[in-house]
Length: 270
Image (cartoon, rainbow, N blue to C red; front, side, top):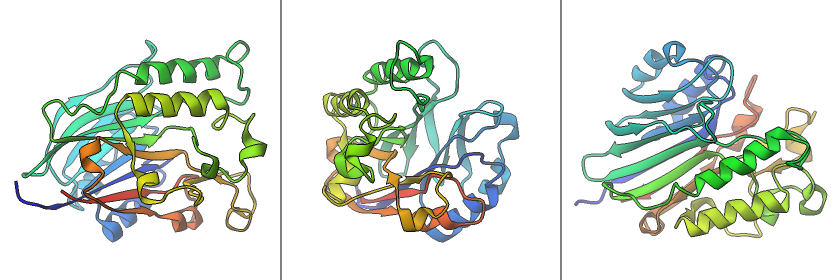
């Protein structure tokens, strides 16, 4: 197979209808071959597909519901083997899987929105945290084995910042949901045992801080820079060497009425 470029982006958009023009602007400027969105917050019938088709993203896989959660994968290339998994026996639209057929390579892509887990990191008193931990256990079944494809990629808002330099203060956030030991250790364990490589950290090793989310509660997010790396791009081992670049589009957090997450782009020479 001939070498070719391939790029994939992930972005928790926090309502695709509210921020449709923002997505259009991002796609026009950065031109990823694939964009995986999370927290689309709309049923499939209301997804603004036509706007993205006009920009060349004519292949779209959607798993949405009214008002909450939802994931969607937009692609310039055909999508096959579309699969929508249900986790914890709850149909809350947090996953979609497909194969992206570039013509020279077939890449299996998993797009995830992991439960946030509420505020109290105790499964005995917080059902949301229990749901998050149970969801992570079921994610162990999603491995990097590509099956009928040439490689696998797992992306999304995983709602966990696993490493010390993935948060603005490791010490202060150890008891805060998204960085508690049970979450970080579980995520890293399922990643390693599943055969997944952390592409962001392959390209930007620790101890360099990497953040993809800044809270709406911060009056001046840029100055305080109290961020977390909640958004991830993992791959099968055979896609690590072809990785050319990781781009964190941090300026997106400063756009008008932004999402609290920013896009992350991985670019490959396959």
